Image (cartoon, rainbow, N blue to C red):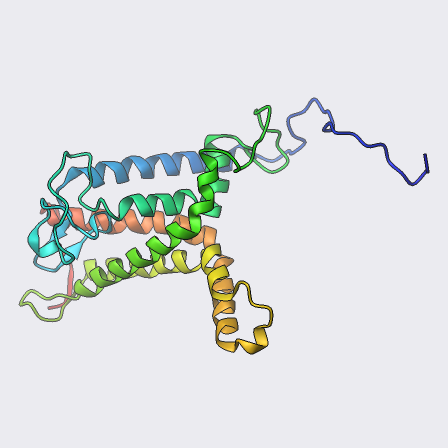
Length: 268
């Protein structure tokens, strides 16, 4: 054997320690686990409550019920029709949007890393040995479904348009004309953040500028690809921030709708 050749082995290096890291690497997956679990519990309860989702006076509709397409929806909140019959409580009023939004986030590249580490410990952190004996990747059921992310992105894009419509309708005054309240600002901020998360997606970046052999022949797409790339650098941040903005928007609408607080009016 030449002195430049190294012996070939199929086994990993064997060390007793699970990791040689000396920092508190358990902190991040634990915090992620708590945040994700709390959000899922809150969102599930609110989506199934069937009340406190609509403020008719100011046209505030919580994003957890948008679009509201059940026959149980308030007629004024159902801008896109009520074509789903009233079903048991565990079927949300926004039954056509929430499944796609959930699958969009569930298959998101950032969320995969986050919940693989925090819920499955696969692995729990960089340079930390995972407890699983083998890894099959995303080539088998059910994880092969992660490859459908690009299609869920398209659905999320359309739903973001619906959320934008809801935010625009929230510029509604007491007399039926133009008006702005704290709820208006919250819903508009939430939809801006949702757009930032949606447009910063890796799939969007590929759709905008992918498969081009020469950027100089496509200056508009090149510019758009550059803008999306800048957003893409913060995709993980937007993924987490929008969890908070969705809760804030929903909670505010619920409190106003339930009569717990009054909307702070800025104009009309």
